[in-house]
Image (cartoon, rainbow, N blue to C red; front, side):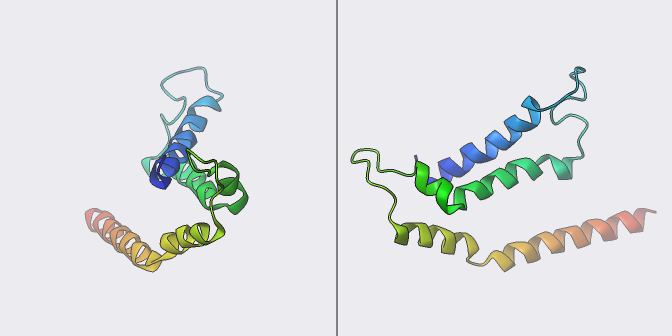
Length: 108
């Protein structure tokens, strides 16, 4: 698996947890139903962080043929790539939120 595929597995497992851990018997409000859309991604995005947890990643990352463990320098590069331009992503999110708030107040 590629690292991106591993991230996707962890992400989707977060969604699965929302469904598996629901305590509602009524299907119309169980799982992600009845949750505000801005909160639906919270558990799944939280689970993605485990891909960057050193002990977690190093315990599952092995070469598919040789079984060689992930070298430390590759792990460090994965973390550096995740953090590269992280501020740009945050600014984009803030910009969208700001526009959404302005539109909301203009309607009222």
